[in-house]
Structure formats: structure tokens, C-alpha cells
Image (cartoon, rainbow, N blue to C red):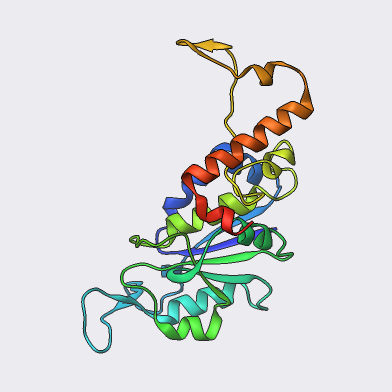
Length: 225
């Protein structure tokens, strides 16, 4: 699978060179390319923004550099083209799984300032995607969230398929609590059932805890089950 990221702040993605994601890229589990939109600007100062028609605060990213960048990295439109935007559909685990099945890969466009010229969306974008009901200074952090979440479903990125099958939201509920050594820490003990070796009882306990935590913290998820 291939991720193509378009941004005016490519250095922000250096953080993806560390940890599980960084190791997976180095091992060739998937491809990650970061392109600077400024490199495609025809302005002598590599400018990528201008004042909005109709007035208003802030600047808007101009269409030419973005469209040229998109067509350069995905000339045959084989990638799923996504613009990270507060106006987009809300990112969730269902979408994570869907995007992980994109055979050719994903293009992630990161806007900045007040956003991008609407004609870019009309001409080149397949989907607008939001990571929540809040506004950030750019699409870089949302793009990293998408890469991290989707990459975890690529074969070989994680050590075990169980890591994605048993985590929060995979079955529509929040995940059960985890414990490790020591058995007693500052007076708090590991639940006895986890020490029993009875896997059927452990599964039952984990399911019960998952249901209780979801009911307490995210009852809205239970309505969707």
C-alpha cells in the first residue's frame, strides 16, 4: 500500500520515522511519500495562498500548486484522494478498515490557512475527511492520524492480528482493561480471573468489562450495535 501526502510543512511528518510506523516503512511494509506543495507553485516566491474573493479574514490556498501536485504524484488517479477538512465525514474505525483495503493506496491533502480553493475539491478530491468536531491550523495532524490508524491494518505492521481484532471500536465497543506485572502494585491487585488460566472465563470477563466501560463512557456506541 502507498500513502502520498501533500503539505506545505513536510518536516512535520518526521515524527512518522519513529516507532512502529517508522519501522514498518523501513521494512517495506508500506510506502510513505511526503511532497511539498510549494515545489509545484509557479509563483517566483513559491507562494501557495492568496486573499479570498468576497473578503474575510485569513488566506486561502490557491488551486494551481495543489492541482499540479496531485496530478504529479497520482497522474492516473489510482489513489483514493482525501482532503482533511472539518467539513468532511467523521473518521471512525469502520472507515479505517475500508481505507486499509484500498489496493493502490491513499493520497492525503493537507490544507492550511482558511482552507483550499473549492475548485480543487471539485476537480480532484474523492472524499473530505474530518477527525472530529474541532478546527486545527492545518491538515497535517489529521493526516498523521489517518496514516497511523490505517497502517495498523496492513499485514506485517503489527506483530499480531489480535492487536486490531480486540482493541477499542473494532467490535463497536471500548476495550477492556489491561494488566501486567507486578501482580500487586501500590495495593491494587490484578483481577483474579486473569490469573486463573481459564480462557473461557477470561473472555467472558473481558466482554463484560468492555460492555460496562462502553455503557459508562460512550453509551452512544451501544445504540449502534
